[in-house]
Length: 133
Ligand code: SF4
Image (cartoon, rainbow, N blue to C red; front, side, top):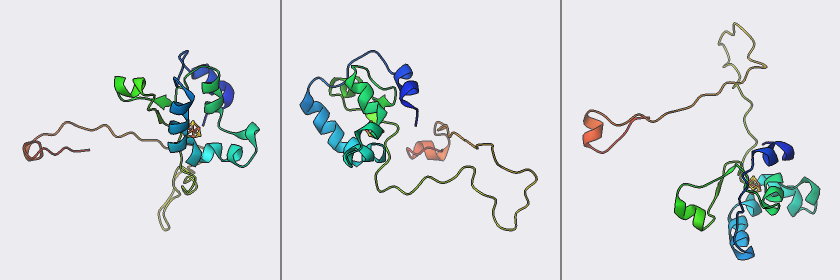
């Protein structure tokens, strides 16, 4: 997760929630069960989620995405940094080499990332309405 300064620099100059009820509903679905705001829920407000603070400044964190214009109207954001309080600790990346597998170069400190771009369906799968990842 970005630092407060990084998140503030990336935030958009637009307001988020039109009233406190809208915020209360959204935060109950998101921040109230997110690991990033757990310190604030435990009384340590100084270490709460910086994205919430940024929204209180009248800006929209870049991490708060919407899928449609309707989502914008109802401020139904999807926070890309949400991680459920009960989620297991993130796995170290890259995943360690399997037992018995040779390793030519040490993995650290390199980070392995991959993206999956969905391909449009073709062939028999397209006729059945399926697609291929
Ligand atoms: S990371 Fe997103 S969902 Fe989690 S507390 Fe911060 S703003 Fe809320």
